[in-house]
Length: 417
Image (cartoon, rainbow, N blue to C red; front, side):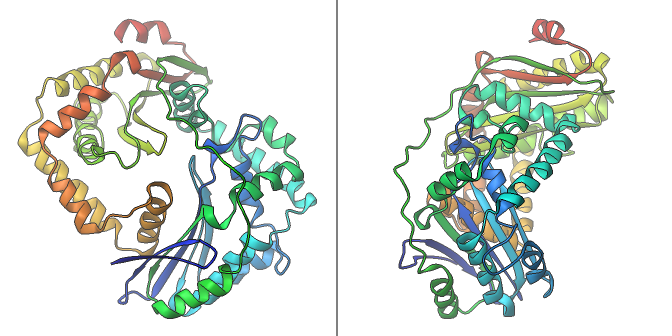
């Protein structure tokens, strides 16, 4: 059972006590990500995530790394488009140590000028690593093309030029604007004593006073159509097709997720069976929905030889047309629902996944459904619900296609599409 409360300084806390576990996972969720950056700031959220591991008033970077590793715990972080999370997982007896460390990183990081300059080189290497991965590049290309100038289209990691231009002053201004008590959700799942936990949270976070400047949320994103090509001297052609998805919290999220399992969500899906198993045209082919507060994107990906790209795109469009003509069977619907429920339940068997689910939902949509509520929503999905979503999603005028290849196939694909 989930519980919610607020600390005396307004920090939201959401918890799930699981007494039969011996682990505990803690997440600090800030509403800070690439969607809140302007073009010159793009990459700052990710850079700041790195800097919180680079030393505080009490700990060096090495001591930060050692503190939880010394007791078998884990410490990490990630930046997304709409949030940044710092998280740890420890056995329950080390709860206070984890809270001490996380609070020290957020409240007392130094942002030392020498460490900032050193980390620029690390992040430039990270950008190069992504550039060397064409399947990452094509997804980023689709996102930029589909969302256009909207900040949802910006890369989380930023650009090399931006990274080199970042200053400590600009970094601190952004940090002070987004790392505030009223912009934070702390989520905790695992074995803990509730009274002790609240007392510790108040000890390490309750006295934090910091006002957030006035802030306006971005507008909802609008889809952009087109074919977006990037040259790379590689063997495979990497392809993404994008359609408008659904925002977080939308009433038809679960029909969309059930549909995705039927269409391209696994080895038994239509795309995998048709393109890989029956025709042997691609090693990797799948689809997935991405939902954000400010918009959504439904992505279809395939990697194949250039000479087979046109055939793969034709088969994808045939499957879309087939499904839009209402040929999903009741058996497919049943299997997709059961698969979705099974994946969800298996994903609950760790404190980390439970902490992530309750923290992210509380931060971004202000509520968290119980497992029973989610399973009931999946069970309620009917074919009419799926077709209703598809009518609004598979609109040719809103379709975008991204292509990373050494062959410019845009003219061929335009004719097919």
